[in-house]
Image (tube, rainbow, N blue to C red; front, side):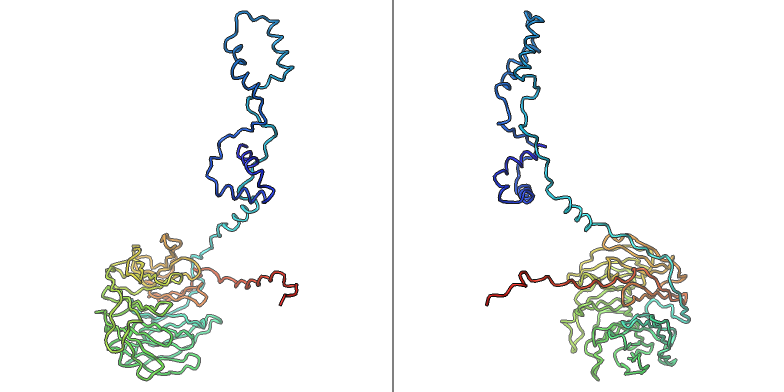
Length: 456
Protein backbone atom coordinates (compact mmCIF):
# COMPACT_ATOMS: atom_id res chain seq x y z
CA UNK A 1 0.00 0.00 0.00
CA UNK A 2 2.82 2.38 0.82
CA UNK A 3 4.52 1.66 -2.49
CA UNK A 4 1.42 2.58 -4.41
CA UNK A 5 1.23 5.86 -2.54
CA UNK A 6 4.78 6.69 -3.47
CA UNK A 7 4.12 6.22 -7.14
CA UNK A 8 0.87 8.16 -7.14
CA UNK A 9 2.39 11.19 -5.45
CA UNK A 10 5.91 11.23 -6.83
CA UNK A 11 4.91 10.77 -10.44
CA UNK A 12 1.74 12.89 -10.50
CA UNK A 13 3.40 15.45 -12.75
CA UNK A 14 4.60 12.85 -15.26
CA UNK A 15 1.48 10.74 -15.74
CA UNK A 16 0.12 13.25 -18.21
CA UNK A 17 3.10 12.70 -20.54
CA UNK A 18 3.63 8.93 -20.36
CA UNK A 19 1.67 5.78 -19.91
CA UNK A 20 1.43 4.94 -16.19
CA UNK A 21 2.76 1.47 -16.82
CA UNK A 22 5.79 2.73 -18.68
CA UNK A 23 6.44 5.27 -15.99
CA UNK A 24 6.31 2.61 -13.31
CA UNK A 25 8.74 0.48 -15.23
CA UNK A 26 11.18 3.32 -15.70
CA UNK A 27 10.99 4.45 -12.11
CA UNK A 28 11.48 0.95 -10.76
CA UNK A 29 14.41 0.40 -13.06
CA UNK A 30 16.29 3.64 -12.42
CA UNK A 31 15.48 4.49 -8.82
CA UNK A 32 17.48 3.22 -5.88
CA UNK A 33 15.23 4.66 -3.15
CA UNK A 34 13.94 2.49 -0.36
CA UNK A 35 10.37 1.73 -1.41
CA UNK A 36 9.47 0.38 2.07
CA UNK A 37 9.58 3.81 3.78
CA UNK A 38 6.29 5.56 4.68
CA UNK A 39 6.13 9.15 3.41
CA UNK A 40 3.02 10.89 4.85
CA UNK A 41 0.68 13.21 2.98
CA UNK A 42 0.73 16.41 5.03
CA UNK A 43 -2.52 17.74 3.58
CA UNK A 44 -4.40 14.77 5.03
CA UNK A 45 -3.39 15.43 8.64
CA UNK A 46 -4.84 17.49 11.53
CA UNK A 47 -1.73 18.88 13.20
CA UNK A 48 -3.69 20.44 16.11
CA UNK A 49 -5.25 17.13 17.00
CA UNK A 50 -1.96 15.33 16.51
CA UNK A 51 -0.22 17.75 18.87
CA UNK A 52 -2.98 17.28 21.46
CA UNK A 53 -2.73 13.49 21.29
CA UNK A 54 1.06 13.53 21.59
CA UNK A 55 1.13 15.92 24.55
CA UNK A 56 -2.06 16.33 26.59
CA UNK A 57 -4.36 13.69 25.21
CA UNK A 58 -2.81 10.75 27.02
CA UNK A 59 -2.29 12.37 30.41
CA UNK A 60 -5.75 11.31 31.58
CA UNK A 61 -5.09 7.71 30.65
CA UNK A 62 -1.55 7.26 31.83
CA UNK A 63 -1.75 9.60 34.90
CA UNK A 64 -5.43 10.06 35.93
CA UNK A 65 -5.85 13.14 38.22
CA UNK A 66 -7.20 12.67 41.65
CA UNK A 67 -9.92 15.36 41.31
CA UNK A 68 -11.59 13.78 38.24
CA UNK A 69 -15.30 13.01 38.70
CA UNK A 70 -17.93 11.05 36.71
CA UNK A 71 -19.61 14.26 35.58
CA UNK A 72 -16.28 15.70 34.37
CA UNK A 73 -15.51 12.47 32.48
CA UNK A 74 -18.94 12.47 30.78
CA UNK A 75 -18.45 16.08 29.75
CA UNK A 76 -15.04 15.23 28.25
CA UNK A 77 -16.45 12.38 26.14
CA UNK A 78 -19.29 14.53 24.82
CA UNK A 79 -16.84 17.29 23.93
CA UNK A 80 -14.60 14.76 22.07
CA UNK A 81 -17.54 13.47 20.03
CA UNK A 82 -18.56 17.01 19.12
CA UNK A 83 -15.10 17.91 17.80
CA UNK A 84 -14.44 14.50 16.17
CA UNK A 85 -11.61 13.78 18.58
CA UNK A 86 -12.29 10.07 19.06
CA UNK A 87 -9.90 9.12 16.28
CA UNK A 88 -7.09 6.77 17.23
CA UNK A 89 -4.81 7.38 14.24
CA UNK A 90 -2.54 10.38 14.28
CA UNK A 91 -1.30 10.03 10.68
CA UNK A 92 -3.86 9.22 8.01
CA UNK A 93 -4.44 9.19 4.26
CA UNK A 94 -6.92 11.65 2.88
CA UNK A 95 -8.12 9.20 0.21
CA UNK A 96 -7.84 5.49 -0.17
CA UNK A 97 -4.43 4.78 -1.71
CA UNK A 98 -4.41 3.32 -5.20
CA UNK A 99 -3.66 -0.37 -5.58
CA UNK A 100 0.01 -1.01 -6.33
CA UNK A 101 0.84 -1.60 -9.97
CA UNK A 102 3.09 -4.53 -10.81
CA UNK A 103 6.38 -3.73 -12.50
CA UNK A 104 5.57 -6.41 -15.10
CA UNK A 105 1.91 -6.76 -16.16
CA UNK A 106 0.18 -10.08 -15.71
CA UNK A 107 -0.17 -10.68 -19.43
CA UNK A 108 3.57 -10.19 -19.92
CA UNK A 109 4.51 -12.41 -16.99
CA UNK A 110 2.17 -15.16 -18.12
CA UNK A 111 3.67 -14.98 -21.59
CA UNK A 112 7.14 -15.25 -20.08
CA UNK A 113 6.08 -18.34 -18.15
CA UNK A 114 4.78 -19.87 -21.36
CA UNK A 115 8.08 -19.20 -23.12
CA UNK A 116 10.05 -20.74 -20.25
CA UNK A 117 7.77 -23.74 -19.99
CA UNK A 118 9.71 -26.92 -19.32
CA UNK A 119 10.07 -29.06 -22.41
CA UNK A 120 8.39 -32.42 -21.83
CA UNK A 121 10.86 -35.24 -21.35
CA UNK A 122 10.84 -37.49 -24.39
CA UNK A 123 10.30 -41.20 -24.11
CA UNK A 124 13.41 -43.28 -24.82
CA UNK A 125 12.58 -46.89 -25.74
CA UNK A 126 14.66 -49.33 -23.72
CA UNK A 127 14.60 -52.01 -26.41
CA UNK A 128 15.72 -51.94 -30.02
CA UNK A 129 12.99 -51.30 -32.57
CA UNK A 130 14.55 -53.69 -35.09
CA UNK A 131 17.17 -56.45 -34.98
CA UNK A 132 18.94 -57.92 -38.00
CA UNK A 133 21.36 -60.80 -38.25
CA UNK A 134 25.01 -59.96 -38.92
CA UNK A 135 26.76 -63.31 -39.38
CA UNK A 136 30.54 -63.43 -39.69
CA UNK A 137 31.05 -59.88 -38.44
CA UNK A 138 34.60 -59.58 -37.12
CA UNK A 139 34.83 -59.17 -33.35
CA UNK A 140 37.79 -56.79 -33.62
CA UNK A 141 37.95 -53.58 -31.59
CA UNK A 142 40.37 -51.85 -34.00
CA UNK A 143 38.19 -52.06 -37.11
CA UNK A 144 35.33 -49.86 -38.38
CA UNK A 145 32.80 -52.07 -40.16
CA UNK A 146 29.57 -50.02 -40.04
CA UNK A 147 28.48 -46.71 -41.62
CA UNK A 148 25.20 -44.96 -42.55
CA UNK A 149 25.28 -42.76 -45.65
CA UNK A 150 23.47 -39.54 -46.48
CA UNK A 151 21.24 -41.46 -48.95
CA UNK A 152 19.81 -43.42 -46.00
CA UNK A 153 21.65 -46.61 -46.94
CA UNK A 154 23.58 -48.50 -44.28
CA UNK A 155 26.74 -50.42 -45.15
CA UNK A 156 28.18 -53.26 -43.08
CA UNK A 157 31.16 -55.52 -43.65
CA UNK A 158 30.62 -59.17 -42.78
CA UNK A 159 33.82 -61.09 -43.31
CA UNK A 160 34.93 -60.46 -46.88
CA UNK A 161 31.53 -59.13 -48.07
CA UNK A 162 30.05 -55.63 -47.93
CA UNK A 163 26.26 -55.49 -47.71
CA UNK A 164 23.98 -52.49 -48.24
CA UNK A 165 20.70 -52.13 -46.35
CA UNK A 166 18.28 -49.48 -47.60
CA UNK A 167 16.57 -47.97 -44.56
CA UNK A 168 13.78 -46.55 -46.72
CA UNK A 169 12.36 -49.85 -47.92
CA UNK A 170 14.37 -52.43 -45.94
CA UNK A 171 15.94 -54.05 -48.99
CA UNK A 172 19.34 -55.70 -48.69
CA UNK A 173 21.91 -56.05 -51.46
CA UNK A 174 25.45 -57.29 -51.76
CA UNK A 175 27.96 -54.71 -52.99
CA UNK A 176 31.16 -56.75 -53.21
CA UNK A 177 32.90 -59.85 -51.95
CA UNK A 178 36.69 -59.60 -52.02
CA UNK A 179 38.97 -62.56 -52.53
CA UNK A 180 40.86 -64.27 -49.72
CA UNK A 181 44.14 -62.61 -50.64
CA UNK A 182 42.68 -59.12 -50.24
CA UNK A 183 40.20 -59.70 -47.43
CA UNK A 184 38.68 -59.59 -45.05
CA UNK A 185 37.16 -56.11 -45.23
CA UNK A 186 38.55 -53.99 -42.38
CA UNK A 187 36.69 -50.66 -42.79
CA UNK A 188 33.86 -48.96 -44.70
CA UNK A 189 33.00 -45.28 -45.11
CA UNK A 190 30.42 -43.47 -47.24
CA UNK A 191 31.45 -40.38 -49.20
CA UNK A 192 29.46 -37.20 -48.43
CA UNK A 193 27.31 -37.67 -51.56
CA UNK A 194 25.92 -40.95 -50.23
CA UNK A 195 26.61 -42.73 -53.52
CA UNK A 196 30.30 -43.57 -53.37
CA UNK A 197 31.83 -45.72 -50.68
CA UNK A 198 35.41 -46.46 -49.62
CA UNK A 199 36.36 -49.98 -48.50
CA UNK A 200 39.55 -50.68 -46.57
CA UNK A 201 41.10 -54.10 -46.94
CA UNK A 202 43.34 -56.38 -44.95
CA UNK A 203 46.02 -56.27 -47.68
CA UNK A 204 46.57 -52.46 -47.25
CA UNK A 205 44.52 -51.45 -50.32
CA UNK A 206 41.48 -49.18 -50.42
CA UNK A 207 38.75 -49.60 -53.01
CA UNK A 208 36.32 -46.89 -54.20
CA UNK A 209 32.90 -48.10 -55.34
CA UNK A 210 29.88 -46.54 -57.01
CA UNK A 211 27.00 -48.04 -55.04
CA UNK A 212 24.30 -47.08 -57.55
CA UNK A 213 26.03 -48.90 -60.42
CA UNK A 214 27.76 -51.57 -58.28
CA UNK A 215 30.99 -50.66 -60.03
CA UNK A 216 34.57 -50.48 -58.78
CA UNK A 217 35.95 -47.05 -59.67
CA UNK A 218 39.57 -47.35 -58.55
CA UNK A 219 41.93 -48.95 -56.07
CA UNK A 220 44.28 -46.86 -53.93
CA UNK A 221 47.66 -48.51 -53.35
CA UNK A 222 50.98 -47.55 -51.83
CA UNK A 223 49.75 -45.62 -48.83
CA UNK A 224 50.07 -48.36 -46.23
CA UNK A 225 52.05 -51.46 -45.51
CA UNK A 226 49.30 -53.38 -43.70
CA UNK A 227 45.55 -53.43 -43.13
CA UNK A 228 43.52 -50.20 -43.29
CA UNK A 229 41.17 -50.12 -40.29
CA UNK A 230 40.08 -46.46 -40.22
CA UNK A 231 38.62 -44.18 -42.92
CA UNK A 232 37.07 -40.70 -43.10
CA UNK A 233 36.19 -38.24 -45.85
CA UNK A 234 36.90 -34.51 -46.07
CA UNK A 235 35.10 -33.47 -49.26
CA UNK A 236 37.12 -35.12 -52.07
CA UNK A 237 39.97 -36.18 -49.75
CA UNK A 238 39.83 -39.68 -48.28
CA UNK A 239 41.91 -40.08 -45.13
CA UNK A 240 43.11 -43.59 -44.31
CA UNK A 241 44.68 -44.99 -41.15
CA UNK A 242 46.58 -48.25 -41.06
CA UNK A 243 48.11 -50.81 -38.77
CA UNK A 244 51.48 -49.34 -39.75
CA UNK A 245 50.64 -46.19 -37.72
CA UNK A 246 50.50 -43.94 -40.76
CA UNK A 247 47.70 -41.57 -41.76
CA UNK A 248 47.41 -40.70 -45.44
CA UNK A 249 45.30 -38.07 -47.21
CA UNK A 250 44.24 -39.28 -50.66
CA UNK A 251 42.82 -36.90 -53.26
CA UNK A 252 40.60 -39.26 -55.19
CA UNK A 253 40.32 -36.87 -58.15
CA UNK A 254 43.94 -37.21 -59.27
CA UNK A 255 46.14 -40.10 -60.34
CA UNK A 256 48.85 -39.40 -57.73
CA UNK A 257 46.33 -39.62 -54.89
CA UNK A 258 48.66 -39.31 -51.86
CA UNK A 259 48.77 -35.61 -50.98
CA UNK A 260 49.69 -35.62 -47.26
CA UNK A 261 51.08 -38.09 -44.76
CA UNK A 262 50.74 -37.77 -40.98
CA UNK A 263 53.21 -39.70 -38.83
CA UNK A 264 52.74 -39.64 -35.08
CA UNK A 265 51.37 -43.01 -34.01
CA UNK A 266 53.66 -45.91 -33.22
CA UNK A 267 50.93 -48.54 -33.42
CA UNK A 268 47.71 -49.17 -35.35
CA UNK A 269 45.44 -46.19 -36.10
CA UNK A 270 41.93 -47.24 -35.13
CA UNK A 271 40.05 -43.93 -34.98
CA UNK A 272 39.83 -41.09 -37.54
CA UNK A 273 37.41 -38.15 -37.55
CA UNK A 274 37.49 -34.84 -39.43
CA UNK A 275 35.86 -31.82 -37.80
CA UNK A 276 32.78 -30.31 -39.44
CA UNK A 277 34.86 -27.41 -40.76
CA UNK A 278 37.35 -29.78 -42.36
CA UNK A 279 40.26 -27.96 -40.72
CA UNK A 280 41.16 -30.37 -37.94
CA UNK A 281 41.60 -34.14 -37.92
CA UNK A 282 41.48 -36.26 -34.77
CA UNK A 283 43.28 -39.61 -34.77
CA UNK A 284 43.41 -42.30 -32.10
CA UNK A 285 45.66 -45.31 -31.92
CA UNK A 286 46.53 -48.49 -30.10
CA UNK A 287 49.50 -46.61 -28.61
CA UNK A 288 47.02 -44.81 -26.27
CA UNK A 289 47.66 -41.53 -28.12
CA UNK A 290 45.22 -38.96 -29.42
CA UNK A 291 46.51 -36.52 -32.04
CA UNK A 292 44.95 -33.34 -33.41
CA UNK A 293 46.19 -32.41 -36.88
CA UNK A 294 45.59 -29.05 -38.57
CA UNK A 295 44.98 -29.08 -42.32
CA UNK A 296 46.36 -25.55 -42.72
CA UNK A 297 49.89 -26.70 -41.82
CA UNK A 298 49.81 -29.90 -43.87
CA UNK A 299 52.56 -30.48 -46.41
CA UNK A 300 53.00 -33.09 -49.12
CA UNK A 301 56.80 -32.95 -48.91
CA UNK A 302 57.43 -33.83 -45.27
CA UNK A 303 55.42 -35.68 -42.60
CA UNK A 304 53.11 -33.15 -41.01
CA UNK A 305 53.68 -32.16 -37.39
CA UNK A 306 50.66 -32.63 -35.15
CA UNK A 307 48.94 -29.67 -33.54
CA UNK A 308 48.36 -31.47 -30.22
CA UNK A 309 49.66 -34.76 -28.86
CA UNK A 310 47.35 -35.85 -26.04
CA UNK A 311 48.56 -38.65 -23.77
CA UNK A 312 45.88 -38.75 -21.06
CA UNK A 313 44.25 -42.03 -22.10
CA UNK A 314 45.75 -45.24 -20.72
CA UNK A 315 44.37 -47.60 -23.39
CA UNK A 316 43.68 -47.61 -27.11
CA UNK A 317 41.69 -44.63 -28.42
CA UNK A 318 39.15 -45.63 -31.04
CA UNK A 319 35.92 -43.77 -30.16
CA UNK A 320 36.02 -40.18 -31.47
CA UNK A 321 33.18 -37.67 -31.99
CA UNK A 322 33.22 -33.96 -32.81
CA UNK A 323 30.53 -31.90 -31.10
CA UNK A 324 27.89 -30.59 -33.57
CA UNK A 325 27.14 -27.42 -31.57
CA UNK A 326 30.70 -26.43 -30.58
CA UNK A 327 33.27 -26.77 -33.33
CA UNK A 328 36.36 -27.10 -31.16
CA UNK A 329 34.93 -29.68 -28.74
CA UNK A 330 36.00 -33.30 -29.21
CA UNK A 331 34.92 -36.37 -27.25
CA UNK A 332 37.21 -39.41 -27.09
CA UNK A 333 36.82 -42.82 -25.49
CA UNK A 334 39.45 -45.21 -24.17
CA UNK A 335 39.67 -49.00 -24.28
CA UNK A 336 39.38 -51.59 -21.54
CA UNK A 337 42.35 -50.35 -19.52
CA UNK A 338 41.09 -46.76 -19.54
CA UNK A 339 37.25 -46.84 -19.68
CA UNK A 340 37.06 -43.02 -19.76
CA UNK A 341 35.27 -40.50 -21.96
CA UNK A 342 37.31 -37.32 -22.20
CA UNK A 343 36.38 -33.92 -23.62
CA UNK A 344 38.95 -31.69 -25.30
CA UNK A 345 39.29 -28.11 -26.42
CA UNK A 346 41.12 -28.76 -29.68
CA UNK A 347 42.24 -25.13 -30.01
CA UNK A 348 44.24 -25.24 -26.79
CA UNK A 349 44.64 -28.99 -26.25
CA UNK A 350 43.13 -28.74 -22.77
CA UNK A 351 41.19 -31.64 -21.28
CA UNK A 352 37.86 -30.18 -20.15
CA UNK A 353 36.44 -33.22 -18.37
CA UNK A 354 36.97 -36.95 -17.87
CA UNK A 355 34.31 -39.49 -16.89
CA UNK A 356 35.02 -43.09 -15.91
CA UNK A 357 32.30 -45.19 -17.55
CA UNK A 358 33.32 -48.45 -15.92
CA UNK A 359 33.79 -50.38 -19.16
CA UNK A 360 35.54 -50.32 -22.52
CA UNK A 361 34.37 -47.40 -24.70
CA UNK A 362 33.91 -48.65 -28.26
CA UNK A 363 32.08 -45.82 -30.05
CA UNK A 364 30.67 -42.31 -29.47
CA UNK A 365 27.88 -40.35 -31.17
CA UNK A 366 26.51 -36.86 -30.44
CA UNK A 367 22.81 -36.06 -30.61
CA UNK A 368 22.35 -33.50 -33.39
CA UNK A 369 19.29 -31.89 -31.78
CA UNK A 370 20.01 -32.04 -28.04
CA UNK A 371 23.09 -31.70 -25.86
CA UNK A 372 23.51 -35.42 -25.40
CA UNK A 373 26.18 -38.01 -26.07
CA UNK A 374 25.71 -41.72 -26.76
CA UNK A 375 28.44 -44.25 -25.96
CA UNK A 376 28.67 -47.97 -26.64
CA UNK A 377 30.52 -50.34 -24.33
CA UNK A 378 31.98 -53.78 -23.84
CA UNK A 379 32.21 -56.04 -20.79
CA UNK A 380 30.32 -56.31 -18.47
CA UNK A 381 26.94 -54.98 -19.63
CA UNK A 382 27.60 -54.48 -23.37
CA UNK A 383 25.26 -51.51 -23.23
CA UNK A 384 24.60 -48.20 -24.94
CA UNK A 385 24.60 -45.28 -22.50
CA UNK A 386 22.98 -41.91 -23.16
CA UNK A 387 24.58 -39.00 -21.30
CA UNK A 388 23.43 -35.44 -20.71
CA UNK A 389 26.12 -32.94 -21.62
CA UNK A 390 27.89 -31.22 -19.92
CA UNK A 391 26.71 -32.67 -16.58
CA UNK A 392 27.37 -36.23 -17.85
CA UNK A 393 24.38 -37.55 -15.96
CA UNK A 394 23.11 -40.85 -17.29
CA UNK A 395 19.77 -40.45 -19.06
CA UNK A 396 19.28 -44.05 -20.19
CA UNK A 397 21.06 -47.37 -20.58
CA UNK A 398 20.05 -49.55 -23.51
CA UNK A 399 20.75 -53.27 -23.25
CA UNK A 400 20.15 -56.18 -25.56
CA UNK A 401 23.53 -57.04 -27.05
CA UNK A 402 25.26 -60.04 -25.52
CA UNK A 403 28.74 -59.07 -26.69
CA UNK A 404 30.68 -55.79 -26.79
CA UNK A 405 29.03 -53.14 -28.95
CA UNK A 406 31.93 -52.37 -31.26
CA UNK A 407 30.30 -50.19 -33.92
CA UNK A 408 27.64 -47.46 -34.08
CA UNK A 409 26.25 -45.38 -36.94
CA UNK A 410 23.71 -42.55 -37.02
CA UNK A 411 20.87 -42.10 -39.50
CA UNK A 412 20.94 -39.00 -41.74
CA UNK A 413 18.12 -37.37 -39.77
CA UNK A 414 20.11 -37.91 -36.57
CA UNK A 415 17.36 -39.76 -34.72
CA UNK A 416 18.07 -43.48 -35.14
CA UNK A 417 21.27 -45.27 -34.16
CA UNK A 418 22.42 -48.61 -35.53
CA UNK A 419 24.74 -50.74 -33.39
CA UNK A 420 26.65 -53.87 -34.34
CA UNK A 421 28.28 -56.22 -31.86
CA UNK A 422 30.31 -59.39 -31.61
CA UNK A 423 27.06 -61.28 -30.96
CA UNK A 424 26.44 -61.04 -34.75
CA UNK A 425 23.38 -58.81 -34.48
CA UNK A 426 22.63 -55.37 -35.91
CA UNK A 427 20.19 -53.41 -33.76
CA UNK A 428 18.36 -50.14 -34.39
CA UNK A 429 17.54 -47.77 -31.52
CA UNK A 430 15.21 -44.80 -31.54
CA UNK A 431 17.38 -43.13 -28.92
CA UNK A 432 17.55 -39.55 -30.19
CA UNK A 433 13.82 -39.06 -30.70
CA UNK A 434 11.69 -38.56 -33.80
CA UNK A 435 12.55 -36.06 -36.54
CA UNK A 436 11.18 -32.60 -35.91
CA UNK A 437 8.72 -31.20 -38.45
CA UNK A 438 10.30 -28.32 -40.30
CA UNK A 439 8.77 -25.02 -39.25
CA UNK A 440 7.49 -22.75 -42.05
CA UNK A 441 9.64 -19.73 -42.74
CA UNK A 442 8.29 -16.61 -41.02
CA UNK A 443 6.60 -14.15 -43.33
CA UNK A 444 8.40 -10.90 -43.93
CA UNK A 445 6.95 -8.01 -41.93
CA UNK A 446 4.85 -5.65 -44.04
CA UNK A 447 6.53 -2.38 -44.79
CA UNK A 448 4.87 0.48 -42.87
CA UNK A 449 2.76 2.86 -44.98
CA UNK A 450 3.18 0.56 -47.99
CA UNK A 451 -0.31 1.56 -49.20
CA UNK A 452 0.71 5.21 -49.51
CA UNK A 453 2.30 6.72 -52.59
CA UNK A 454 5.99 7.39 -52.28
CA UNK A 455 7.42 10.87 -52.60
CA UNK A 456 10.05 10.89 -55.29
